[in-house]
Length: 213
Image (cartoon, rainbow, N blue to C red; front, top):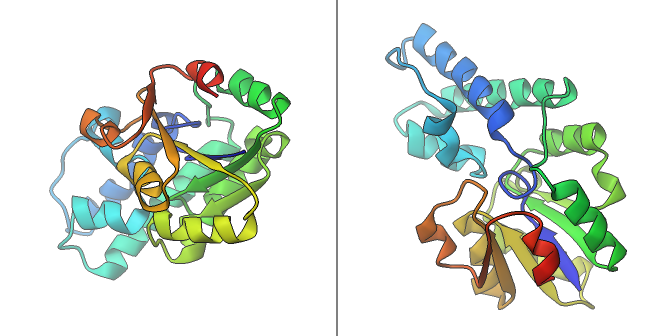
């Protein structure tokens, strides 16, 4: 059995580094005359956690020129990586024990994330993720195509196994719908109740994963 985990909102409590990075990018947009000055709280921008960068900007400020979206996206990426390498990245409470327990049960574990490659590499180093995870699939490496399409690569690489997808957003649960696999929704993450209607099971706290699996 192979467990495929989303990262931000499922394992990593992204709020600790995303809000500050977002505000840095938004400040640039204000300075350049592309946006009106206003304050965004961590809660205001949490709906974009776990969403790939192009989709986030197309939803937040679709009228921005593509080159400006890319510049703002790069600011967020750079600031988040600096936060990770500066020790600010935090896994959700209990996740370390959950992952260790699942590893001891013999599961193969993979991360499938909408993130950039450099972002995941920073987390691998800072949080020593390789002690649990066998492989990583980042949306940037696939030109930010949807997760259900990236999943074909996972199946091709690991054909001799069953899968369970674990995440917090609709993009995770669509993997299950397209590929006919079970999905577990993490209510402690950043998805909505409507999104979680797409999954098969729901956990409210990380430790519940050990009970289900």
